[in-house]
Image 1: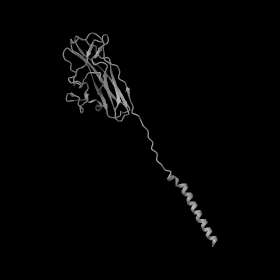
Image 2: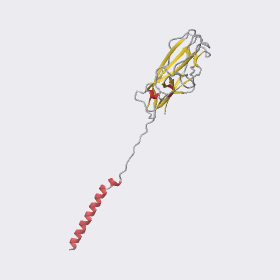
Image 3: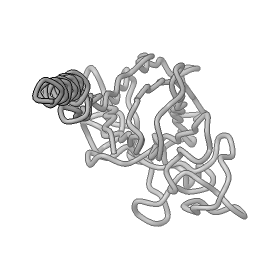
Image 4: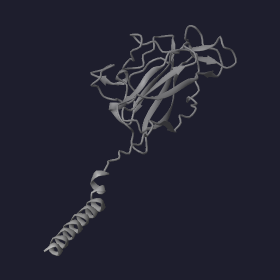
Length: 223
């Protein structure tokens, strides 16, 4: 009888030890479980995929008889910024185009009817001359409100991007020409800049023989 009790006790202890061994083998997989969060920051980037090129206005003009000369360039901006970007234009001089031979010579900057608001048409009074510009965008929504037109007037948020309309002077303060609300496609977003010189016959003040130059700077910044 004693032998049987001891044997049963030994069997019981063996079962308990087996259960404990199994517990320590399998339980750590549960007790030691933890989750890992992996994060990666991607910086907002912006670049001129295609830079604007220098412009030679055409044709050359005769101050006494007057005429119109034009020129343009395109710039392509790329950004991965989800909030988009804005681009401004600023001129080195508020006077317009300055003579290369003499800085006292100038083709005056365009004078819109309302300061800071483009005119739908490029209007030059008799016996005067003006230099100005307009902007157009590959995506109308990207274009600054100032250059959107509706019913023959510019500065309309719900307006269109009509070609060769909405002209303004190039001032020394940065003027927003594009304000995009999202990232660009891989190829970027294109903006077209058009410049215009109109000289009416016998302008006053006079415009002497010279080569006239205007230097402008485009600046693109993520929103």
